[in-house]
Image 1 (cartoon, rainbow, N blue to C red):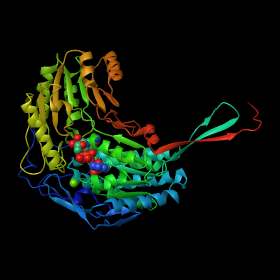
Image 2 (cartoon, helix red, strand yellow):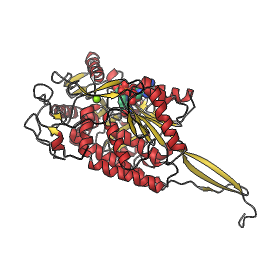
Image 3 (cartoon, protein in one colour):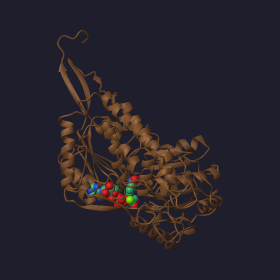
Image 4 (cartoon, rainbow, N blue to C red):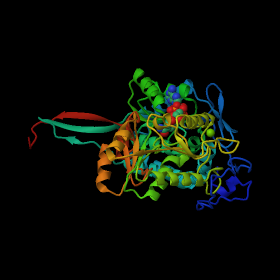
Length: 531
Ligand code: NAI
Ligand code: MG
């Protein structure tokens, strides 16, 4: 589709307008029910051109001919029907990726050429930001401004970042004992199977596809069944940028069918998965019981956000709010356990409640919207169930607690105080707009409670005391600690979990090691001058 400005992609059925990268618009003073109830929804008039599977550079139907609907979370209506990949399609995609790896040209190309294709793709993607952001918001429900101004630019940045690594991957010369010359080669695994979830469809595409390709692997990607559209669109652009056929194959479909077939495939050499801890365990088992392919897992979390006694309360309230509510609360690293020192607790709770009541919820295509609908009915019902359980177990409901409006999957920004550690809402991943606040007395207690979780993905620490920050940083058993900030996702910063939050790291230099294996090459030395 030719590049078109967003203003022409969106036909506005209300008087609000959505200009390109417009500033956050006017604020509404309590959660807005407008778009979730009576006002007509904004209809994106973008044409959905790609709904088939992308195998060997061609869009093709599923072998079975089956399709499934992808739904608009604002209404539950069908956006488009998409080809439903299954084991047979995974076989075809893996065969294409295998050929592209074994017979070239991808791993045989110079790394510089690979890097240039990735850079051209990043440029094309940047040019098509509005269309891609429109698809992402339509399929997922996240605010358009978040898609267009935050996420797609991060995807572009990620491809440029790893394009920069492609021609800087090299091994070592190793000083072994004895008369041997030893070198290490860092080689791609071969075919990488990548499985991504629906909460950040394109961002997580970039976290996996960019390093996998930069390292010279070929790829079969399975998207989440809730959000298949954006990956198909951008992968087409990747081919326009010069990507050879078979290097990147995209299969839409469900987990137990297409996802399981990819995880257990004998010809897939590496697997990288992002999603729930429960499915992560299944995928690891499938990998182990097939060809023992190495697996990177980025899984769930129940991340503590610790507000110490010397924190600036207003800043801490704002940050704790966004740490939890960002992306409708659908973040693996959501700051979902807000632990506040007792000296600030009452003030904090009151201000957190006021902030939640101000959160602007509504049609994600509208300017100024902070929160759209949850991804689907299943997640929506699951979140409401957790809210009921919070109320029943005796936590204090400070705000929200119910569906917002009458259609789609909108939930009121919800704040609980007096949350105890043994309540379900304090233990399990809710993955929704539900903040749980509890009180602590001293730092040791905060550390002990923060670590008393099977998860270990991230933590936020809010303090102005350097000693306190240093103590917490080292005591917390998590993969990322954000001090006086949260959700900083630079391409260069490694991300991943301790404990059941995952294995391995993505992004940065650490992300390369997931897609490279080390080969030692040993050669005898005859009469070396310096041995
Ligand atoms: P999920 O982990 O089941 O799905 C993630 C991906 O795995 C999807 O592409 C799915 O099709 C695939 N999958 C599912 N079963 C599979 C199998 N047997 N073999 C291979 N692939 C499989 O997550 P789901 O059901 O969408 O959400 C459930 C919960 O998981 C959420 O409520 C949330 O708590 C958590 N979650 C965590 C995410 C994260 O970023 N860490 C992302 C999405 C969900
Ligand atoms: Mg959808």
